[in-house]
Amino acid sequence: MNCEICGAFEENLLRTEVEGAVMNLCKNCSKYGRVIGTAVQTSKPVQRTVESERQLKYDYINEIKHALQESGLSIEDAAEKINCSPKDLKKVVNGEILPDEKITIRLERLLKISLYEMNFVSDSTFKKDTEQLSFGDVVDIKRSKK
Ligand SMILES: [Zn+2]
Image (cartoon, rainbow, N blue to C red; front, side, top):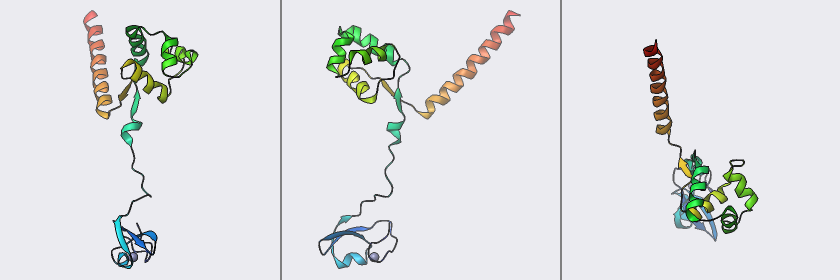
């Protein structure tokens, strides 16, 4: 970030009040006013990668169906409680549409289930390994049959 008075680049600028105006200044220029804290960096937004890697579980439909059965709620009841139209919820349960985040979170709360899972990198490497294994198994089976 650059000092708003002299333009000097400094990693951490000081939030300084100068004659009533709050500016982000370097150590030297902060002498002109009253330091009130460290500058808040606005140019680089903090990336929340964790949230973007959250995805619906593969069998979220079954989770919803099962939880609905357990709770004894009909689709109409559940839809009313989560403030969504029964028509939409039916489509979600039938796998015709993906539930939007609002509905998913409300369903999670209502039915005390979790419909999201984290998409970890290690998870996909694991899947690749098992795929290779099963491919090898298939080859072995074919060979032993001959
Ligand atoms: Zn300065």
